[in-house]
Image 1: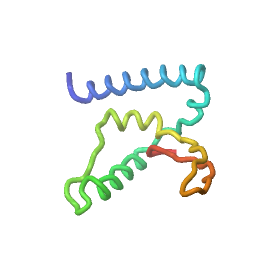
Image 2: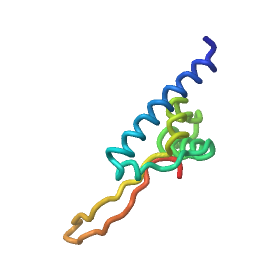
Image 3: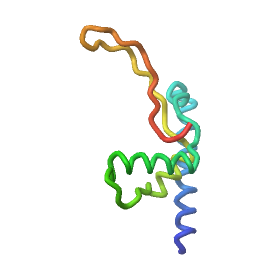
Image 4: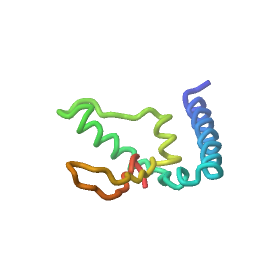
Length: 106
């Protein structure tokens, strides 16, 4: 089987599994479902690769970082999730709630 057909099969399996998961979340865990971010664009994924490469992978240059195609496929379905952090005490001060986005899109 050529690589492109294998990649297409993998992408189809990932999409099927993702849609099954999100349908379950929508029905059984709507608050978690609501935290999912929209799909990431290819430009957003490339930007994430660039930022990670600059900060962690090769901070002094070197080979570019490319995420595995299966991860890119998943991010094209969902760019990540948003989390609401609840107040916590830090140094005796109560910090307020804040939302944190984890992912590449949205």
